[in-house]
Length: 281
Ligand SMILES: C[S@@+](CC[C@H](N)C(=O)[O-])C[C@H]1O[C@@H](n2cnc3c(N)ncnc32)[C@H](O)[C@@H]1O
Image (tube, rainbow, N blue to C red; front, top):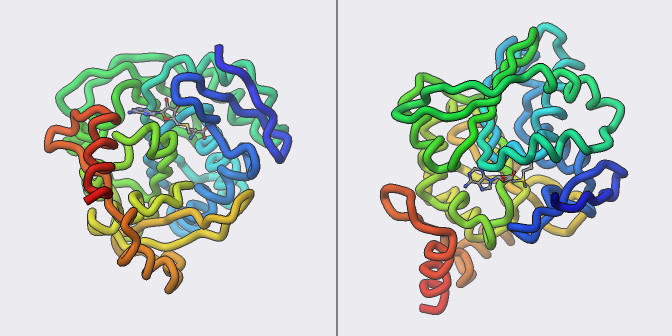
């Protein structure tokens, strides 16, 4: 089992040995990162003031902080709100990691609810997946277990549009397949016009990739570090880019997106090598 870490705000996360990275920013704190980089920027609390159902795409379920904080925050605003979440996750061991977390008091209700979920088989698009399923009052959660790119391809055949997207894979350097223009385009197809996609990443390659996929992008005030995090939308309201960042995106030699092949099957290493050779040119 990977080792646990206590983060800056006192909440716990894990260090993942395969990716050699923590699941959360240790300097911002696991809970704080979730609230400030994902829940607030996607404006889910504003959405449930206007409509009771909110559909969320959660890329990288991990230790479930993003879903837990989202659930906890929206119920503060509207106790009748219904949260429909599709989470994408390849590592079933996260359910064991979650069991060993010492949880912050305000998230305990969510994690207690999570214990009622069951693993079922479900057909999504052309494939059958193992899906952790929970449908209790305010929450309909499906954690689809499998390769993220394949799941996102299969979701294209389901009749669903998301009001918000949490993009929380490990960093582009190690988890490169989850940060390409190709996958951004597919997720864009699944979003409503006003939906906001939020990610902790400040990478130029990611920002350029989102632009190339046809998103408008903006910046979110930093927490626990100097870099701003990133939001993207088709036609919703987001904070603007700074002039400095616009210039960097136009002139920096590192402002080159990551590309997969058409079937989205390249390995992270292949994607990164192609990116590195285009930087050198
Ligand atoms: C940074 S962690 C997510 C933290 C999580 N959002 C939370 O709030 O606790 C990234 C997660 O993405 C998952 N992941 C990485 N690459 C993936 C892929 N290709 N397909 C599906 N899941 C992937 C990892 O297994 C890991 O659980």
